[in-house]
Amino acid sequence: MGKVVLKLGNDISTDAIYPGRFMATVLPTETPQYCFADYTGFNTKARTEGFPPGSFIVADDNFGCGSSREQAASTIKGYELKVVAKGFARIFLQNAINLGLHCIECPKIEASEGDELELKGTKLLNKTTGKEFDVLPMPAARQAIIDADGLIAYTRKRLLEKQKA
Image (cartoon, rainbow, N blue to C red):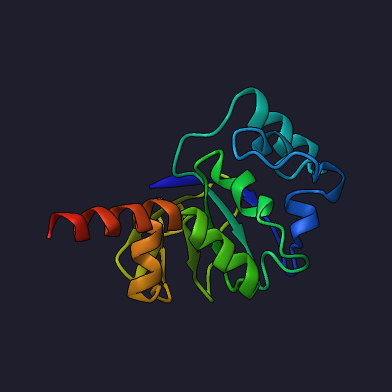
């Protein structure tokens, strides 16, 4: 369960998520400071106060469109935020999975900043409005990577399991 800390519309590009002028910074420990840098209210709050882990960014369709920069996913993951969108750009979604960022595709989501959301299996409940929405389940292989906290951790875990067998 968590609160919506940012509500966005359609076609949120990777340049909005992680502006290109910061591309010289690539370390996952440093990228979070530039998360939505041009959304100054959100960025200032993220850097100074932070958000409770499990808080949500909610967007409409085509979240993460534009370039293939991996930093767009790592900057959000740095705050342990989850992203709920009506739809994701393909490359952003794969980068997010590889980094262990929780992305929830919910085509009919209705939520505003401050609303409290709870994920229950294939349903997303907006506890503020009382409305419930269907979530498109992630394929099992992709979900396993997210649950392991990213592709590197997933691969390491699988290799260790093979060594024990």
